[in-house]
Length: 105
Image (cartoon, rainbow, N blue to C red; front, side, top):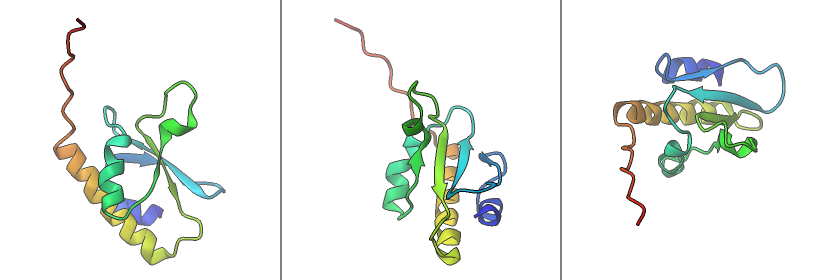
């Protein structure tokens, strides 16, 4: 998974450290990007991950995601990371627009 991330995700778009054990790789999107903005597009592209905010009680982790590398064959990891890298690139080129706050009546 690490080598696939190096090949398919633009430098600086996603940071991560090699896992010293376990089943998952924790990743962090560039500042200002939310992992939940990727979920719908990733699911439609056949890629699943868990947004990091699910693992924090205080709402932190919005720009984090957890990728599973256990029990997934290498070719599927390669293809999934390729698709995810393309989606992250699209998100960086066309970030979600912030909705203007509606006045409270």
